[in-house]
Length: 257
Ligand SMILES: *[C@@H]1O[C@H](CO)[C@@H](O)[C@H](O)[C@H]1NC(C)=O
Image 1 (tube, rainbow, N blue to C red):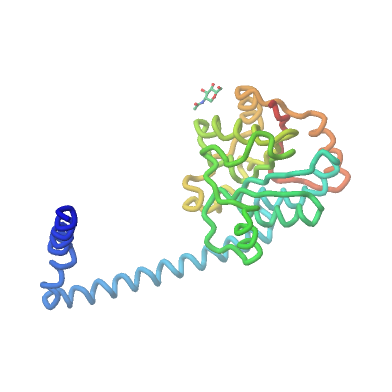
Image 2: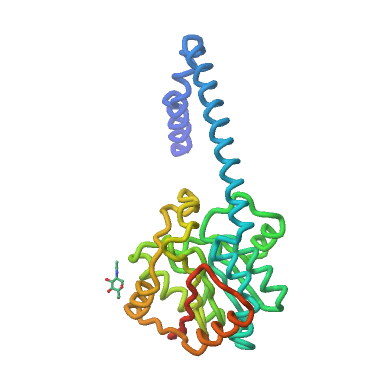
């Protein structure tokens, strides 16, 4: 009983102390200021909107030219199937536009899952359905991922690791390797390629830091990840036969679990 009275008293106090009750008293004085404020907000929204649409336009062109490593993953799927054969049964793709990769893998009769490392504002309906089913998840790859060890035969990462500092790479790379029973395949940008400048830094949190092949090799040795040389050679051969000339660096790493 006494408790209840206490609660009511606190609630009444809250009403008085509420920040909006103060502004209500000054409403008549503040209204010219308010309308100027509203106009400014409107102008800002208009400007923001026009920037956004021009930016979206740029990204569409980018996609059409295939200037992303995720696009190159999609082109490489038949070659990866040739390289790994029947051992490629269950694939996790990690990277932007993961829904497209997952759908392509489905078309190749391969079980596939996806992790989208960044916010998705404009997911298409087919992608939304993959999200609803939990086949594609949005997750920050700087932290451990919600799958058990060796949940997949292969993990493919594209356009995702370039944005991590070495400190986070140290966590994320072993984490991706943990999830694969066979191989971890990395598609990374190449220094000096135009795609680095046009990528939207606000989406990725920081601009891409594109590393040279020798940087990556050194890094793999440091983190005790071994290159899967047999797979790398097979893939190279298949790529040559199919005139596939990737603009991204592709690394095939053995899972060391
Ligand atoms: C990352 O890990 C390697 C190997 O364990 C270590 O030598 C290096 O200092 C680490 N880098 C950072 C930034 O933590």
